Image (cartoon, rainbow, N blue to C red; front, side, top):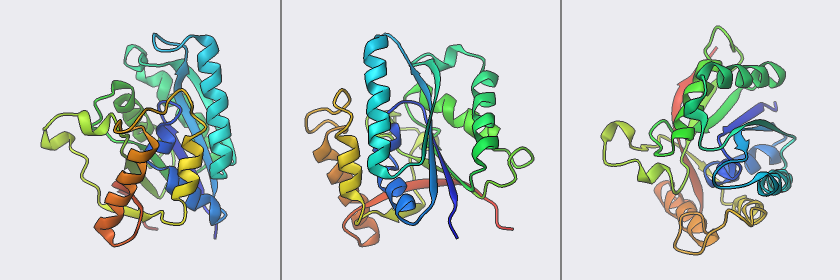
Length: 223
């Protein structure tokens, strides 16, 4: 039976760097995937024209992954911690009511990027069991260039306990990432296509496959 999947991402390209292959895998199985971007408004990094380009890239990347719906909150990039978290939580709650996903993927709580931490907190609040009883699993993904720079605190470390074989979907992830011309960097930057391949191969070696993605299971409800 197909499932409904929601990926909650702070910024366009976050949805690819961590769970892109897994998203493609869900789509290939007939699951309905929605991606919700929170911080996609103009910021110190990008003006309005460039942010619209990034939005267009996000839509194109979603098509490569077979995503059925893409939503944008339009909140300020690198400015989520200056907003009342209730505003972010309520927007996610509306997406949850519309999509009623069984599985949610969102950022890891230990990321150095403050937007990521805020999105994690808002997503978990929005998906609390009494408000969203249909949610069965919540998993956190890594975001290369943010997760690994969080410092040496054990409490913030990304320690995955769920692995997804993406051997058959790695090329879809790479092709989708290629749509983000403004976000790709040269190797050995973590957001280079070569580094994405290496990371997938590294996680794959953990479970004995050619490519994998890793997640932290935050909550699972078995009914």
